[in-house]
Image (tube, rainbow, N blue to C red):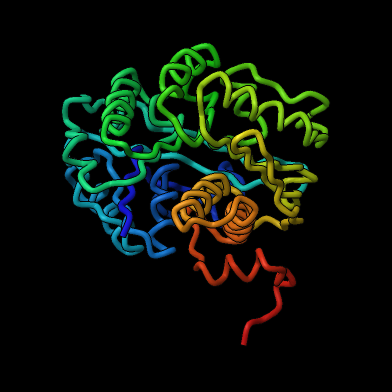
Length: 340
């Protein structure tokens, strides 16, 4: 079985119940998540052999993260213990015209302060065929940027396929710093994953005839974005999610795959959102799975989009669906009728 490694931060997520605002809440619900951890959980749910690599404190909160990952079948044997704190983030779910909000409390977390030398990538990558990281991890600190570069160099030397979700987070670093650091990492990347804004935010590569705020997305414009990313950095594939926000609750959701000068677009779904955080990670997990399964390009993008569509009907960050459920949706069973 193909082995996959995902590298990044796992955090404690705290959010009020339902649609309460943080200033209203007198209690918070606890879960655990992070961009690469979410991808790892998706892949484990699909039956893949996947390891998550990070550094977490050697105390009960760190162990709770491990327990959560193990619950889904993710290999946690490569996680490093140490450091003083676990990153935290707060989520306030939006409704109607009020957007969702995320507040980070992750500065000086165990992974952000970890030294690159703590990760023995040759050992970590033994028997591995795919390595996944996101732009969130190098944004945590200069040390993590260096760790990502060492991981990519080693993976490339070992013939391991590398995917990166750009995942620009303006609350973690500036566009200028993101562009500088990610330009150095992208030269190693085989599969670039992005949303409709990432390429513009990180590299200044904009889709023509597109206005994300008003909901106007141009397919031709995103083909140009993918072509530019591929030519500039040598990526073999570019996958982009295409979200049209009608409101915080209702979105149009689709995606595109660019490979060897050809482009495939998925069908579009109208989603009534339960929790949109982690939707992009579910797309990445679905993409990696379908690629490893050797699906045809149209099925690759259909599976990835269907997987992320289903995720946004599920509370918290991690996608808890099966291959059969994703296949049913991508083949047309989108009514939401009771299954019995």
